[in-house]
Length: 597
Ligand code: GLC
Image (cartoon, rainbow, N blue to C red; front, top):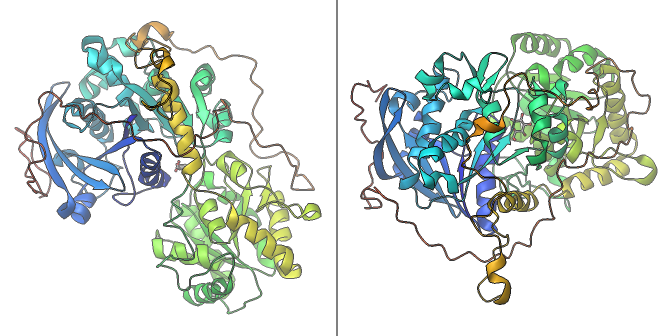
């Protein structure tokens, strides 16, 4: 199975959020299970600066998009069994930041167009092109568009992962032709139009062969208006191809026993180091050296959907408890100013750093006792998993991936791996924080067992990579694990190979997609109201975990043999792999100024 994974950021190359962590670790996990995997990213300035000398220049070509004819360089690098490709165009990507420019639509339009146009230069013709969020949402659309004219594009199946539906890539419909090179038919039939705007994510949701949300609960939430940012009707309509696959974390990178960044290493079997890390954190943040007072940590972007209003609302009540509070993050000014002000009210007990700082975040994961994440919505959330891995017990609101990863503490049967609350209400949050703080102080043995359960959870990619391989298998019709030649000669032909996918991918999306407005099935239950439900006195309402929207078969055993990989020699491939190492390739786009050097 040949997978091309397209993303706009990936660790260790470039990162602004959780997408980068996923794109940085899932591909290697897929490769470890026997798939052939390549990833394609833009060649940002940051990547060039940090990895320029490791990049291998493959070739260049020109990409036509609307009236533009732009240079596109192709660089590569091998890492953990995965080929990483970087698409170079200095005008678009040689800038200090990844996003936030007024021409982001044009930049990622170019990137998505280039991913499809550069396919002949990649080491294989993919069976599946897996794209992520709005920045690569045009990929399935371009494949359909090109597939009408060129057969070879029809063989590729597409998967779209939704990491956060809030960002949809919305533009004025007048730019459809000029920026994205698409015929107005795509808007006329409503495929790419939403509320009068071009909406790239909506187009991809309709065009992709499979879509998945980054946790089972988020997949269900996306069918309700409260979470779907107006795309709930589309999500309900596409629920037949929607699944929820929980993210994993890189458990090698995040291992308290070996992590070189934290002050002292430790493990579930020997927790002495964690106490030392706590002392170190208190010193670092100017908190009192109080070994028996629980430290509550937060590492978060300071934005509303992270649930910060709740923290602001009950902060003073929290600080009445025998606890310390550490906050790291930056974001909206109102939160920054409030937390800074509050920290001054509680010197030695509360500390705030308005920063994005990897090292300090690890000091908090390692040194804190409790980790607070009261998100209003959280597609998956990785911080709670990292915290658990470091024995820092999470306190979370039951939404999205938080609900799927944290099971509430139940004293009576000594179960659970954290503390949870359901309603978006400050009083409910305060209730569980109090419960957590007093469990730490008054019942250290029970707290130690709880902490141990948190540390022993399996948050590796091994399980979820298997779920993705089953999605790939279902859209391609290729069996997974692959059927090996030696096994069972008889039924070999009957396997549904290549040509047998359920729908005819080549059929232009236009026919199947009725125009706006989308008729929303009426039977959906209304979503849980956001905030003001009565607060549950027992904050552990033990709702059963949401079932995955579309249950996938259990993960395959990881033994899969590598299918004999026939290297496709793509037409038009220029002298690839000549061994030339020309890291900072000069750009030669006619008529385009090169931004910077
Ligand atoms: C987004 C989501 C976050 C998720 C991450 C990776 O950043 O907000 O919840 O963990 O993507 O999928």
